[in-house]
Image (tube, rainbow, N blue to C red; front, side, top):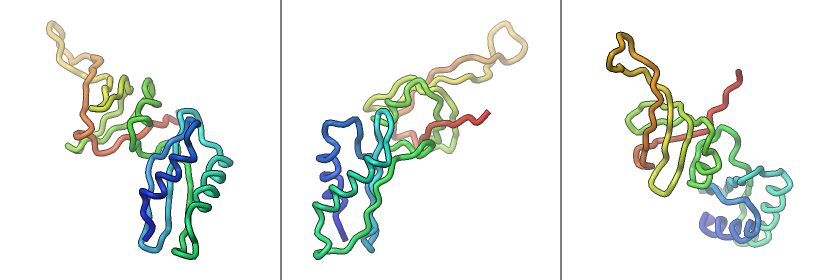
Length: 155
């Protein structure tokens, strides 16, 4: 089986000087390799083709046969690295917490420890009979987050 670290290192070398970066890499026992990349702006198909060809040149098909797929982490796909979170600051995200609670909120900030979300929640307000919508800002550590993705509103 081909080592994913070797693929990631080759991809990172080829992506130096661009705004693209590696999101993840998987390899099955049958050597079906899938490399996901993303960008601070956008990823063109041509960029995926160029990267695929340059990685294939570094691998030896005589040593091990493989299938390599280089793809962009698509819109709505799960966020896997801090750079993806930072790209979406100011956008709406859907976060599934490890407790099973789903939060649909605006991503206010992202750093090494976690993310800050703001959303509206009905809360009891002193002096009011009914619960009022209040904007809540909460911080979640990456350990509390099971998955997160960009929220796409088709309305």
